[in-house]
Length: 328
Ligand code: UT7
Image (cartoon, rainbow, N blue to C red):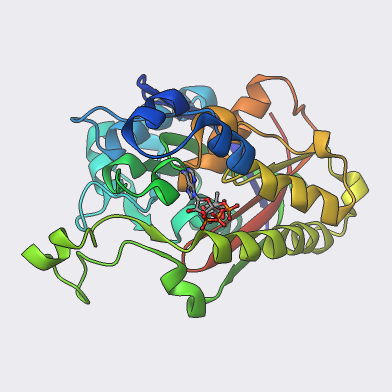
């Protein structure tokens, strides 16, 4: 089988910055608590008329320009999101239409914060098997739309953004070298948006109980994250036939600086090898890893031939990692 790689990358963050100081005025919290417990200083919030597809569209256009591909070149569009424009049709179909990608199939992928990593694994499968030449994978989120702004234990954590990549064929041994995807549905209740689906359809009661907003058991998710990130990184590296010492940069899901610090410590890896931008965006779910990768590339931290390991975890519970030999 041939390989696949990232041929282009793009991102978009909304203009509106919401600082910790503003949150201090909204709820019973402090900048000091948020910074010491999470590392987050500010996050971006989409405008009232901006849905996830609007953010994803900007990121997709930049990724396609970077890859030098036209809308007609796309065979498949995958959107990873926990905040689709609507339950159905898929946000990927909204993008397919707005991009004018007439030849492309399109679907959403639901693995919460791991959705984009799951999405590039699917894209790799399509491209390396020859089923597709050019796949657009977007992670687009507007968490602010499902945030309970009265719940201080969650509303300080999340933000809105989008990241996108174009996946194209590569020589074997270049681009994506390995994938590791996992799930534990036993932990489904730890992060969820309980109502609005077929289990709890929308009603006055579900709205009164704020069941259309994000609910999370932060402590349990924290324990899960600290355990799963090192395991997922080690698995991606060993499946690629490499060692941790071969890795130039780790790009972890940006949820909490303490989770990243703990993962670095457990792996015995220098903290400087872990890219961090959580202080500026908070946790942007499926957009977090591609936006971090975008910023790492643009900051000159990843060069052609470098090895990056990308790792995500989130609701489901789900997790996913990949070892990526950068080819651009
Ligand atoms: O994408 C994956 C999704 N999620 C995550 O990765 C989240 C993982 N979890 C975490 O990052 C952390 O567990 C949190 C940041 C959510 C919470 O940090 P923590 O150190 O686990 O705090 P805690 O939940 O144990 O709460 C400690 C205290 C509590 O007060 P008491 O019970 O000790 O009196 C909370 O009520 O902090 C209180 N607290 C706050 N205080 C000020 C909770 N939220 C806030 C807040 N401001 N915003």
